[in-house]
Image (cartoon, rainbow, N blue to C red; front, side):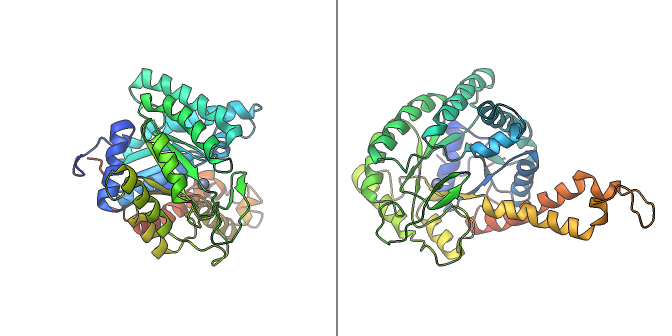
Amino acid sequence: MSVTTKLKPGVVTGAQYLELLEACREGGYALPAVNVVGTNSINAVLEAAAKNKSDVIIQLSNGGARFFAGEGCPDANAARLLGAVSAARHVHTVAAAYGVCVVLHTDHADRSLLPWVDAMIDAGEEHLKATGQPLFSSHMIDLSAEPLEANIAECARVLKRMAPLGMSLEIELGVTGGEEDGIGHDIEESADNAHLYTQPEDVLKAWEVLSPLGHVTMAASFGNVHGVYAPGNVKLRPEILKASQDAVAARFGGGAKPMSLVFHGGSGSEKAKITEAVSYGVFKMNIDTDTQFAFAEPVGAYVDANPVAFKHQIDPANGKPQKKLYDPRKWLRAGEKGIVARLNEAFADLGSAGRTLAG
Ligand SMILES: [Zn+2]
């Protein structure tokens, strides 16, 4: 595969997705994976990607998918599925107009959420029949809190369903600290904790079983935590990623960086550690907490700057209507611009700016 190949702009799946991963590996860069909750956040991510001429990963947590279908939808389980389908269709509809390649992905699903993942794969089968493309590029299963054998066995079952559709599976080994959408683990800080720092022998076992079944990407723990914590709480050790790549390469071949690695809990990480992790084959860095704040902060500033418009439809001081100030498009747009500004930084940190494969 050549990294100079141009791809059609829009959602990439199957062979195109693998080509994008190869370009990341050869070019030594990674893509931000941004959690979205509505068309506002999706469009802001696409705007930022277009502006930076970077490809990008858009992902939904189960909570984000539920929110997309509506918090008021009485059936939460239905909403989780329908929101994921609806969000994915929105991205399929508009992404090409932004002139970049977009990977569509879903975030952490523990055992209780496996029915959600299976239902999304069902929807992917239908979408493939109708359009020639599955709905999502990949899904994620996080059974890292369970024994390794149970984790791998369930991932194998799901991967066998996804591979024929040209879909990829992201798995997690070792426990990333912190909490993401209610799926969380306590942080234990001992340096040799097998849960906080993924062990190469676990990676070898997972790779041996899963890589022959289909395409798999690995989220390994190297001291990363979900969310933002005070600096110094947990030490990032990207060299753990290199140890795993070396172990897999020695046993199974596949070049210096045989695995496509994922960095969970990228918000608030030191730039030098991000660069180091990318050099060891990380192609995807999850960002959620930082873009949430990037949306909220300018909305707060807008409300602070226009306090009367958020209390009175007509300004009591001068009798003037305030529609131009409270129109949701004004303050939602402020939030969107905040996301774009934060992602400008992410594309620069990850080295993906100017490198879109879309042509
Ligand atoms: Zn994780």
